[in-house]
Image 1: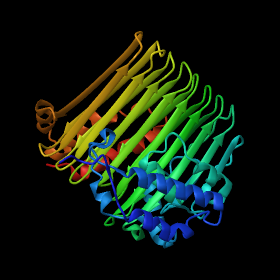
Image 2 (image 1 turned 120 degrees about the vertical axis):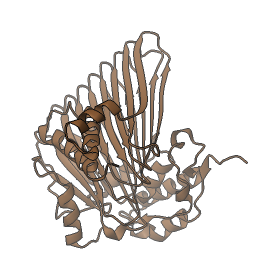
Image 3 (image 1 turned 90 degrees about the horizontal axis):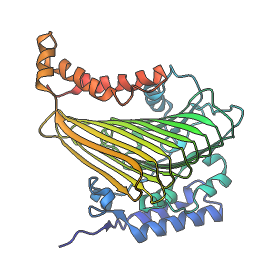
Length: 438
């Protein structure tokens, strides 16, 4: 018996037709047609199964049996405010845009309005929304499902030479009414020549419910642009969380993505990057912490299609009893991409013999004048270090927490903004101090 590459869920298409008339832009024939086309393409392919190489460590069999209908944006203000207060970083000045259950929440949002920045919410501009739903070369199976059922998102266009003075916070909230619901958003960020911006994305959700959050992002950097995205994943413990990001980086531009994965039962971060110009730089850094019934999957691909470019990847994972993780990092160096410099590192720390970490670094090199390295490790806490801290009066939980915090902090040490750096460390410390296995 052979396993299927893709899985079918016969309830998804009828479910789409049942809610189609209620989706944003349903009264526009063009937008409605694009949704239908995306759903047809998804049905043709299906859900990635265990034989699809990119998904081998994330079992999606449950999606063939469960149907998640789009969530409603209506919610009690008290429920929303409680989750917002936990997610919003008050110490970081700047605008904040809030999506609740996949829909814009105007009451809590203050749109960015700096000179040289055009910010558009999709549900407030159907012309832009329709442009977002056009098929692209990135439209894989789940991307097409997102195109068919997406309810909101935003478009950020930064003019040439514009350097945003303050970071933009984007907060995604899933409330207690989203049990067995889906939250699907899309994002496009376009940075003009020598533009600079920082975006902080936070995902947070209610506990005790099962929902599916899926965001698809496209980032395009012109010559000399510099864009950094900070991502905090704090979904509910039963949630399914997926983000799919595609970046295009031109001459002398720099794209950075720094993430911390803490929540969700199934978490998948997919980052596909392509160099479209020379002397450009891509920086990917992240940490993931998991325990009982949690699965974190990090999938990256960097396409070095141009010469004289540099990419760095640094990911560290900490897994307590019952937690699993996977890091799949692929670097592809094209034949003409001489003088490429690519470095990839994935280190994992197991706090229990009942935890599991999978590492799959890949280098596909077709050029001959390159410097490419990769390394992957899985290990336990050093017994001597633990004994030393215990001998200084720390109990076992505190000693483990200190060692793990030091292990993870290397991912965030280079963040220039002190408040952001502190936020990453505080969230890590909170996870460790409360629930590290003694």
